[in-house]
Image 1 (cartoon, rainbow, N blue to C red):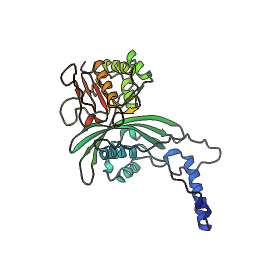
Image 2: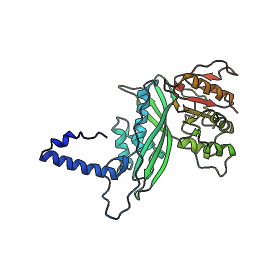
Image 3: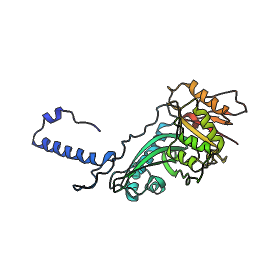
Image 4: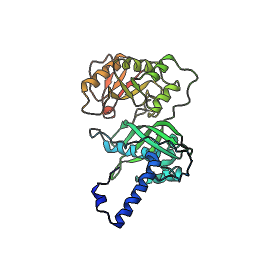
Length: 329
């Protein structure tokens, strides 16, 4: 938020002093409502003060991305649907926020877990990666954390991953469909490897990926590889099973992700894969170590040779922003 320059107060006459007082009142009201904005309901003396929603920042793509404007378009609709000020809940408000982006208001009906019952909500996009990108269509996987506040003032943390589908248009790409992740309920019991992955501080899991593991739907080979790689690297996972396209984008070949046999990493040792400043030697070493951990299908931004099997390593525009680690057994 921009701050008024001190010299503005020195120039105040009656009108500007009145504006200054009104601005101060507005700032006080905004502070009562946390980061989601708006003045909120009037609170009577003695009423409990609601917990503040955490501050968030709009997500921005890397300038080195393959199509940064396409990713930004996908993220904007998720940010619009997953965050609202007090009084902004409900389908009508969600439709208005989407329409303000110049997108079909009907997309609000596909928000799913992004639109829980809540008085206010804040959303932070963790990363946005391609599920697939072609000349005239794309899938962008928007990974996010969300905090919702009830009318009583309690804050609940959550989040999801949304497969945002887009198609080329003029003057810019448009969003055609939203497919939020649905990980399923937690399993009654989990294998030891799953419990270790969930507890490993060197493996950062966003909400949908963690829920996939808690649901017991992730293959043991994936869990073992994560633990092996975490001995050498700090890894930020973007997608495991849910929230990923069912098929390799643009084909009829089943993806390994929905079967719980793959995971994607968007950051290694704190370095985003998409960032050109990230040493290519680090990403190449990570890809080779993923193959050594048992992956038959390692994709990323670096072209590698010398795999144990033909095609073990690959690179393309879709994997410019993350490393894919897949397993066939």
